[in-house]
Length: 120
Image (cartoon, rainbow, N blue to C red; front, side, top):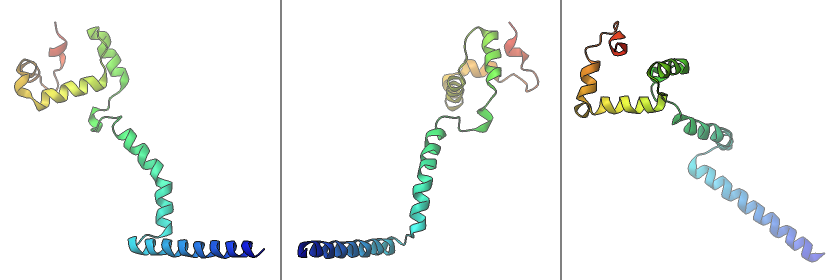
């Protein structure tokens, strides 16, 4: 019986030490318990955001209707993947000196006259 009481007292002392250690850490980092709870609650949402961030184009103007890609694919007879087209056009934009023939064909097009590219 005496051993049980000693063990209980030891556990109570260890518990007090842990509580003091927690308080010291909270004070050292100036963190409140509610902030930790908030972090634990929002961490999955943040990780989901990080996963989704790379899944979609970075610029909203590059987000288009999938139907338009299907229509264009039918017209040219080749499947157009939006991500691939985005990467290729971005590469042309970043390195215009490597693609002068493509730029030469695109530049004369007026905003209202996109039929030039579809004419054969």
